[in-house]
Image (cartoon, rainbow, N blue to C red):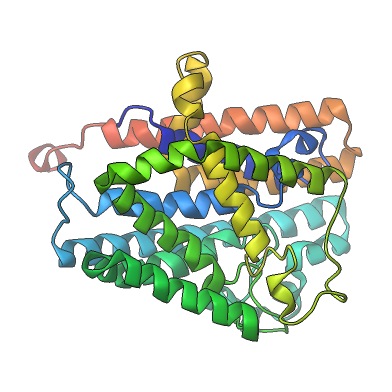
Length: 367
């Protein structure tokens, strides 16, 4: 088990934020940073995934590991995330069906785009396996599967030229904005909620920036000097969010996605705001971690075990939605569901690490 660090801390904070935001209308949602900016925890989660890939595919001395090792490592992670998505979706469907039966309310079967499965399970099951049919609030892991799946190509390209890898990523991103490219949903109409053709830019940015930040002192110096610029961008995001200032998609010029705050296509405004957040908060962990020791260790523990914590958190947030639906919500109910959920996330992280530390029985003992 690695010691707490800034990457795990911020990833843990993103996981807590996603959990709370996936319980719409709860009391604590208004206090998450997604309510005070253009970007939100999803951008942070994907960027840190790229940064972590940059670390994982290099040795402690900064030298790249063998190319085949990196490819196999990332493909193994892709399979792991895909397995988590399929398992989580199956459990979520069972929760929706069970709640509909328990409450004798067939309308619950329509929650979060699940109606297609219960109406046409044959085609929709194929769509679930292909990741082309997604439940609402369960659509981040499909994005993650695709991004980790294509990550080997960008990792190997970045070893030859990080600038070229970033340029290719930006070209795909720009073309997707201009021509509105996206992966199609099936069965049914529509596209992916998180467009991988656009969101891959954040992953590649994390991979590339981690390498440059590790190797170039001048970059670390300039990012420190740009903290005031980040603060200005964050302040502008607060103003735009609090006063609900948004460009009208029907009034902006073409290509319209360049000027809106669209989350599906990771519009440039969201990207700029997220870069501002990175600049403004780059030194916060070093300042606050010694002062909030237990909280920092809790969040770092979540971040170390992000896949398991995210999967359990998605199911817990769905359960919390059912509880709020049946009880009508309120401060007390929100305190119970959010508080118990945060405890459960911590227990999940502890359990994963306990299992990894538990000694395996020897082959002779098993016989």
